[in-house]
Image (cartoon, rainbow, N blue to C red; front, side, top):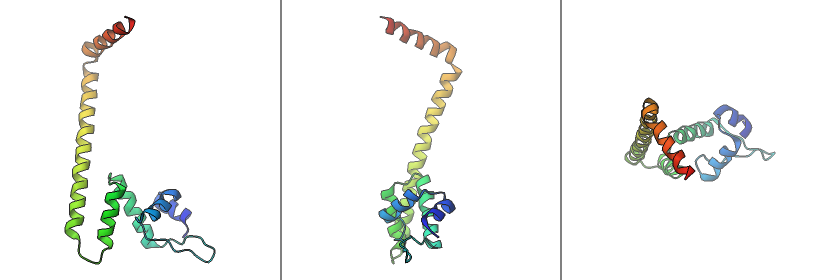
Length: 129
């Protein structure tokens, strides 16, 4: 299949597929006699994997490192698991930060009348001076 078809199948834009290829996240894509890229199921799976890992917050650098470990002929299970563990920790930290922000906003909403109105009035008063 061509890049456009692969894009539709994976939900990854054609530009991103080309970027993944340039960055080494997917294998180099063979071209047919017409010069068009021919994407096979192996590359589709790699595109999907990269998309999932990016959605999990993994940086391009860490993803490249992980893929290199996967593609290496040696058993790199320990290193692969360590990278995944680090990603989980990073995502948990992001989740905690988001939860803190949500809790803060909910507090502001719950105490809007007794806190926010007074604070906003003070700010308006300071602006007038």
